[in-house]
Image 1 (spheres, helix red, strand yellow):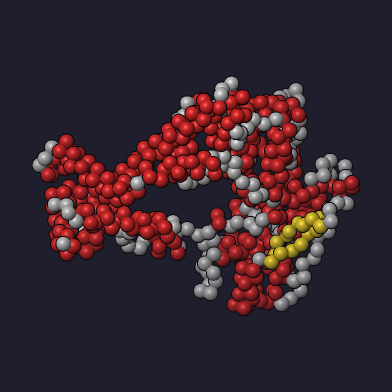
Image 2 (spheres, rainbow, N blue to C red; image 1 turned 30 degrees about the vertical axis):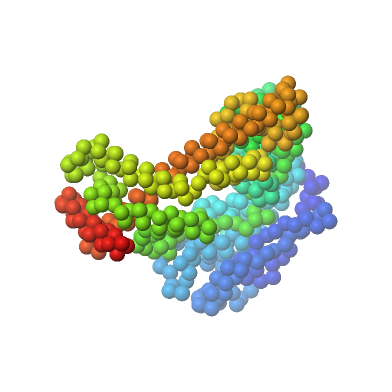
Length: 551
């Protein structure tokens, strides 16, 4: 049955003025004075490509010069899009198949509009914009578009426009038949990664993002039992019901119970308990963020999945490797520090004797195990292990003297507690280490930390809540801070050992690779043992010569 009440709210689709606009613009739905308005926005890279074909392809230029040939132009792009094995002209872009699909997706925007409008006529729900979003997501999916284009028979079927619009209408109806058009279904089905990206796109920051994701996990459990798999409420295939206050109340209780568990995210544990109103507000905001994020009306469509692999990037990956400790650093400051470490380590290894260098070349440079070194060097495995540990300990001590964690760690921990405790940067190794250190505290210490630094309650309030006096609370805070500092220093020592090990590996591998390139040798040769001896001997000569230059 037609539903005219929401048909009248569907905005008018403005005409595109010429072929270039039809194949090079995308639809944007804006809201002005509480009314929706459709606008066409340019895709400049498509205009550039369209113009290129007009200038270089005679048949295409002929079609563009005549009126009422948009169908033929669409078939022209279809031919390029689906014939990926055909030989391209010298002037054509290497990604011509991808660009052809983009031109067609732009052209079929109008079919998305009319398919959504058609289905909406017979729908009891005012979901026109969701139908439009679904159709556009379908058409901008390269696999979907290619599949429909390939199934189209130019000789036997209706026009390409009609065929595409019918396919889009059917796809919308198929999703309607299984109740896919429900914001609550979308909230439950979307992955944590997509939800995080949607919240970030909506300008939400930590700790709210992690708290919303954790809350959604609790909501999925409650809502699924109450509304989805409760056959007294919903039959299979029916539209998913609205969540109600009881769902939000139970979800809030679940959130508050699970936030104290050891596997709860730090941002959740550090925050306060929530009520059903807060839970409902979070879930409704998650829905709004997901709707805006997944709707291609509001976002440029990514086509990275169609990018050809192994082209220009391969030339970069085949460049010769060189030992450069700075190459992995992200900032100028870190680069200077790592270069300082590199220079200091180089000076230290210049003092190494040939037998030490040989052990390191065989173990790190050639990847020979200690059990094999025992035979090759004629000394016991325990002696080899002690030799390697002595070398690493010396470099670790040097690194510790340079970093001096005992000097700055106390101030750093205190600053982190006040500024970053509620929303730590997990990509920062020190932040991540401190988060793990907090989890290792005793339960009472964690509780006081969460109340003081997470919920930002003062000592007096915490003392009243926990039945303690102020001195006891301050003593717990002080001792916990010391424990965090000790844990951080212990973690830094582990990092230093790993850093030294990695430095030795990269340095001695670079020596071996340099000799292999200059002598055209390989460690994978049939006479590997003899080849290793040749490589190591030449590396030793180079290293000892460099040591003499440094004296």
